Image (tube, rainbow, N blue to C red; front, side):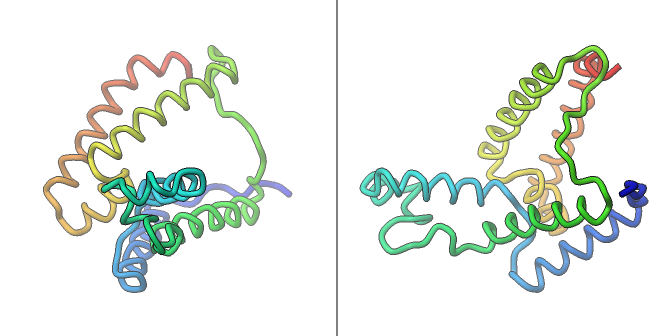
Length: 170
């Protein structure tokens, strides 16, 4: 199957706005992902150390006692995003395993760089009490000053770091 060209970014942005609006209407919440990871991690901890989860003030609301960590809108939103991404990749003829990288970096270096960047973003998401989806998209749509400050900081940080990372792509 020949891959289809990617969507026009303006059409994709409008579609994302429709998805965000639908999420608010259907679930009463916006989009987000880091909360789902917290719940899945809490479920794993609860499987091996339930007393720790029950007595931990941060973890107990997610899985303490009879609480099911998977009974949350954010978990199913992320499951839907994963399945939707797979369906989109399949429909567009782009579903394959590959590592995007520049000519000056090996696949292993690219993966290490991605894992390091992901760890920094994960730490930032917990520090900011939300990921880029939750903070920038949902919080930004609600005109939250903290979310706009977060979004601007992400862009400024990304542009500042791009100078040092771009030689891996060129």
